[in-house]
Amino acid sequence: MTSADVRTSAGTAPAAVSPRSRNKAATRARSAKRAKAVGLNGFGLLIALATLFPIFWMISTAFKPSQEIYSLNPDLLPAHPMLGNFRQVISGNVTGGIGPVWLFFRNSLAVALATVLISSLLALLAAVAVARFRFRLRSTFLILLLIVQMIPGQALIIALFLDFKALNLLDTLTGLIIVYSAQALPVTIWMLRNFVATVPKDLEEAAAIDGASAPKIFWRILFPLVAPGLVATSIFAFITAYNEYIVALTFLGQTHSDYTLPIYLTYFFGEHGAEWGPIMAASTMYTIPAMIFFLLVRRRLVGGLVAGALKA
Image 1 (cartoon, rainbow, N blue to C red):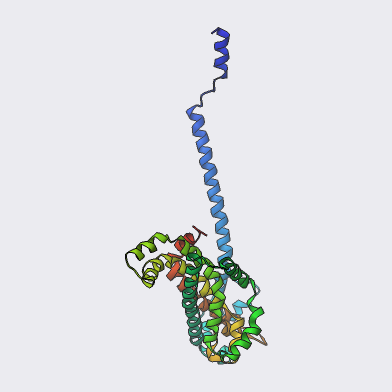
Image 2: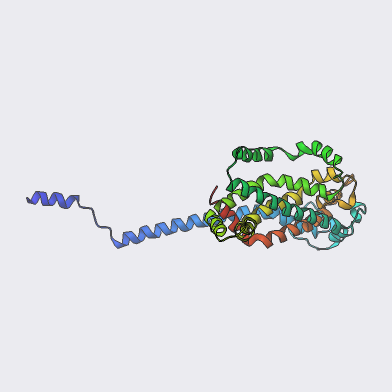
């Protein structure tokens, strides 16, 4: 090899990267990663503030006297906090004396919890059927569930009213529970179907070989593994039943003793204006049961949502 060839080979060899250059590159990468994390956290904080501000304003207004609520320069916090708005809500006097708020709390909680139990049980049985068995029109059934969910509930009010009147289910909480359970079923069946599909069939087959009966396999093996999914779907069923207004108002009529909280809140809107202090106080009390329910199930909620996304 000639000296020219040696020089050519040396010229084409890659230059060595110094440790100082590598450190600078690593520092730039860490700075970019940190800046990205700060930006994402800041964006998430802004979203959280925008989401939580109406709740904060509702609670703050609940403790304000009338002059502060209608002030042209309202403050974020009440200057003279008071409990008078809550006392008016609890007494029921501001609504014309139709009853204390505890009566409507009881009705709403009874309807919501009954809806959760009924819809969860029926949805679990249906989800096991569509996830474990192959039958004719199975795909059609699943598609119909989505189509039914797309139909607005208000479009079915007249037909449901006539049917429930023939069955003597108007003016009762039982009728509301049946309607709310039916409304929650399409989505809960679809969600629970994914949870059931994630459970290995080998567990059920092994239990069957050991002599376990079908009910025992269901309650001892399948049910505990699908329990996180039931928690995730129960949130949807609870909110659906707890916040619904139109069906409750239509079906209950003038039966004040069976009114739910959404109907009770409308009595604070009179012909001379709205009582915003009591409205915010009642809304604050209205959110407490939903928050308690969420805190009770939150440990299983995240795991249930992740498990349901593993397999469709």
